[in-house]
Image (cartoon, rainbow, N blue to C red):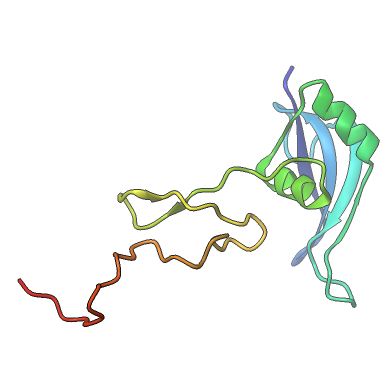
Amino acid sequence: MVVRIRLARFGCKNKPFYRVMAADSRSPRDGKHLEVLGYYNPLPGQDGGKRMGLNFDRVKYWLSVGAQPSDPVQRILFRAGVLPPPPMVAMGRKGGPRDRRPVDPMTGRFLNSDIPANASKPLEDGVGATTQ
């Protein structure tokens, strides 16, 4: 039995509310679960922030026994400081070579934005004209 830590949707239409649950991977999204680990409210509150509450001890326990977090839960656990950041590689263009510069997982921006990806060597004489 593979255990996954995933979100179960509750709430009304257009007002989602999620519970973070440890469940068997074969059970449906809102079906039978093993344990409720916390909650996540994606709608901003009065202060403009998203509400989240987790039982960190139980989350760490389930991760230690081999439970695999889903992608949204992995992002939530990263923002809470439980998991390391997921690997991110930015693509320059579709089908082209990948840009190997490190990307900040919170903002999606390059960490070293001093040097553009396709920058060529500066010209020695300072003139921008090229000859063919």
